[in-house]
Amino acid sequence: MRKYIIMGVQGCGKGTQAKLLCQAYDLVHISVGDIFRWNIAHHTKLAARVQRIISRGELVSDEIVAEIVQRRLSEHDWNYGYILDGFPRNAAQAEFFLESYDIDAVIQIVVPDEVVRERVLSRRLCSGCGLDYNLIFHRPRVDDICDVCGAPLTQRPDDTPGAVADRLRTYHEKTAPILDLFRRKELVLEVDGMQPAEAVQQEIQTQLGLKSSWR
Ligand SMILES: [Zn+2]
Image 1 (cartoon, rainbow, N blue to C red):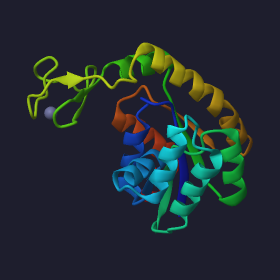
Image 2: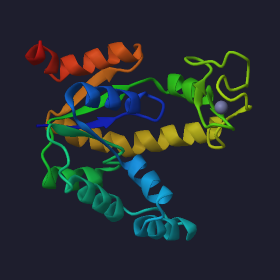
Image 3: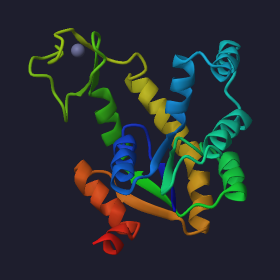
Image 4: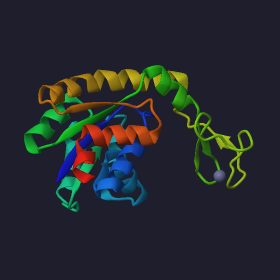
């Protein structure tokens, strides 16, 4: 059984890395963002509750997020383990988690802020089919036009320089205490997220000690 948490600022590639690691070792990717999106798409009670909170201009509380994660983990639909993505988001959630669950490692993907800024500001989204592009890694063949459906590419409204700077600041403020807590338990592995995706994945597997036992 392998239980990991993956952390890193938006745009660091952690979703891709979580998926690759899940495929390689039959783990379940538990993404809090995906759980929220699934609930909203399926119009569940939880989604209605969360939308009421957001419509009042309030933030979804730590308790609700913790409840969602607990409920998801209690499904026990993993045979070989899981990777938790998007939780914990602050020190209170991290304390709760460490009290209630054991974890083998926290994978921290490290990418400098200026690189994150450049990656996020290069993101484009097809207005027709929703396909993701990136002007650095995955350019369309014709500028600003989707390769697949020919619709114009757009930017997400929150991918502006100011919004990215805000997200980076919030991320560092909230995650520094989480990482300190996990570091005291010697759980944190730092992985250089500046390498190509396959190399990042190799480094994660090596640092987790998975490769030697499987080859
Ligand atoms: Zn398209």
